[in-house]
Image (tube, rainbow, N blue to C red):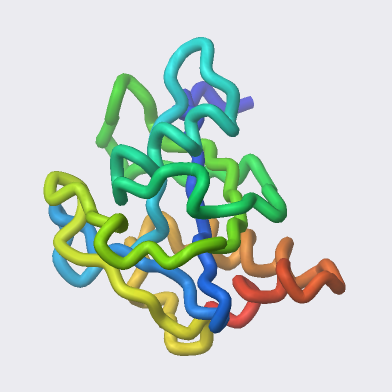
Length: 160
C-alpha cells in the first residue's frame, strides 16, 4: 500500500463546435501544454471546483460551456522529492465540455498560470507537449474516452 498523498483536482477539455479543443501553455514551463485544471478546495464538489477553476484560470463563466461527460479520478505523481500543497501528486477528474457561445474577448488566461492559450484540432496535439509527469494520465484519459461509442467522448482519443 502506498503512503503517497494526492491532492484532488479537476481538469476541463473544452471543445468548440468545429471540434477544436483549448490547450494552454504553462507559465512556469514554456513549451508544456495542458488543459485548464486546478485543485478542489475543502467542502467543494468536483463540479463546483470546475466552475471556480475555469473562471480563475481562463476567465470563462459557466454559461459559456456545457459539461457533457466526466471521468476519473486519474493520478500522477510529482517528480521524486517534490511536494506541492503538502501532496506527492494529483488525483484528477476530467470534464469534457462543449462551448455553447462565442468566447472571443471573454476567454483570458491567467498570466500566473499560462503564457498563452490556443484552439487546436485534437489530431494536432502531440503527447510530447504535455508535461512528462502528466503523459500517462493523458493516455489513460484518452483510452477511457475512446472506449465509448459516443462521438463526444472520442474527441480526446485522437490526442495521442
